[in-house]
Length: 265
Image 1 (tube, rainbow, N blue to C red):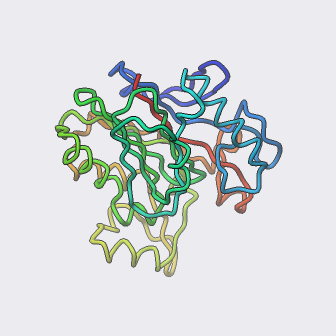
Image 2: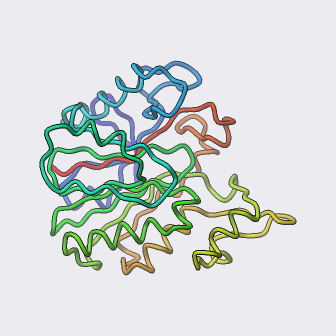
């Protein structure tokens, strides 16, 4: 992936998805918006104490920079689960989707920009260039324990007839194992769902582990039938990169949200 700019937006773009040439997509940084400290400046999360007017302005800026209408920019109310919203027909009022509680969005509708907000969690983008369908998923530890990555892939296959061998995936910037220590309840949640904990976490003390969320989601995508060459990872720790990214854990909860976004041309 490489950092680039589109109009007023500085973002990280996955080269793999760009090469399909049917969509625009990326992972925003914290720069170029209108929010004031500590949310400076491109805060896209309404679930913060930032001014809602500033957040809506930032969302409109993101949409317009990529040629989308602000009213066709869709983010949902994320709840750290694994439910996924499917938008498979034109809608007269996309704004009502913002109130729905889920952690993923899938659409085959052109010119509808879908996005998830993150500040440590993993943003995932999926693209089937043949069936022309895209997805964006929010994978925190709870969503990852519930295997939301696999649920996204299965939804493309079952609802849109996607071939797993053709699905492309991009794993965006997230907190790395260098900065993400978790405790036994997190370990238990993964074990209860049959996730191989030892492959994604390393013990760092009594009842403590360093968890590789991005690596875990890559493994789940591979287990879902995606090929390794069709998965691209940012390999960037948002907690370490204070200048470019928000981090909930690093900033003690008082911080903004960057986004993973995608839109069919």
